[in-house]
Image 1 (cartoon, rainbow, N blue to C red):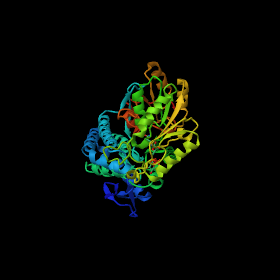
Image 2 (image 1 turned 90 degrees about the horizontal axis):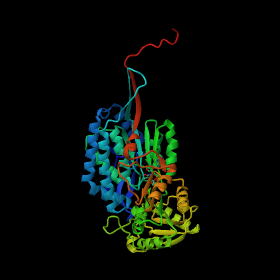
Image 3 (image 1 turned 90 degrees about the vertical axis):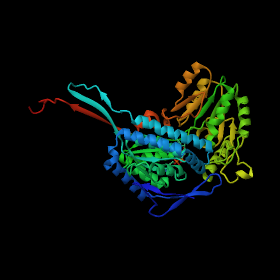
Image 4 (image 1 turned 120 degrees about the vertical axis):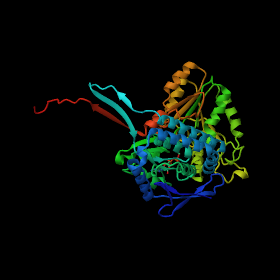
Length: 491
Ligand code: NAD
């Protein structure tokens, strides 16, 4: 049984109250770990430790080359421990082991990418309007960063924040989701062996309403970087007004996947499945809103349905499993409620919609892969984030109409479309109002490409140079080499 503690100012410790939380495996439901449960007091200590490390420790004297070397070492460390980390991620989230391994490979690559960025000079010389003067834009670390994370990609999402924060010289308090802390705990344990000054990385475990809220409200936190649901994001934004801290929000999505009649049919069907059923649909960018041209609609739905029926459910740790369980009993209820709503709203339930019957699946929080057709824009299953293995299909006849419908959402995280028509590719990519648009592909992310949402899917960007910029303050430094008196006032 794994035991997890808080990591504050370079020390592992329990919470003041000795409270703990059992961490459950979504396949089987049993506890695989017990971890310390912090409250506001321990979170305040962690913030103070990050503040001291930012203002007074050796960390502030580290050169960017030293920080780059640290990031590169972290990349190597993740790679060396990828197998163990991936197993932990699967135990904690239920996703298949192969998906967890992809995550670890991405994380190693990400640390190396931000290591390379840390080596660059981020200052800019500006042309001064005055002779005998110098004007420079200097980029400095923003300070103490609070990082609040979701349960679906625990270590990947944490790494998207930790790597740029270390690259710029910030200090941090990391708060993983209270239900999936295991890989972040392991990561902090590995990082703690790399001679990072105490207080640079702090880890607090516990609920959002106390630990997360303390980070969001604190006068001593300079940036909150949050990934999670829209409603939580709004609460965090309000709380952050307390000291006008910077807020970076990566929120939910309802992501259209549009299939034009001239699409490569077989590949588009294949990706329509990939877009939704990885991690049982619990992906912010899941292409759960499928829009298919009327000329190919019936055939597309028929082939898609045959493939959906063959998806192999099971334990994420088993080699032949294609889709694991949902994260928790409560989340399964939420998904089942959406399925009920879909039927009530008049969508046609073609496949799935219930729990699987196989005895070996009864201990996991499974919902069978589900296909709805005859869907319309007004339905809640089309408008809202279901976050489960559910595809809704809408039929369309016209390019302008489908683009307008796809854009008719409060979200703007990602979208995909499939066509072989070059002119249409240009038109539709320009018209879709989403932070990422994939053409003839879906769910591609990499370290160089900024990630974030339009509209209520968030603000700011992670990854890429924009992801680094979030952790910088900009200072304009102006020096006059030969000041002369103006002799304007009271001469
Ligand atoms: P959530 O909003 O319920 O929780 C996220 C985190 O916020 C958790 O750590 C939680 O403890 C904390 N929290 C809850 N209430 C809080 C409060 N009042 N103050 C401060 N912190 C608080 O989200 P979730 O269910 O863990 O994750 C799923 C959501 O995350 C989905 O909506 C998904 O789309 C989104 N997500 C977005 C991205 C992206 O890149 N845009 C990536 C992954 C997940």
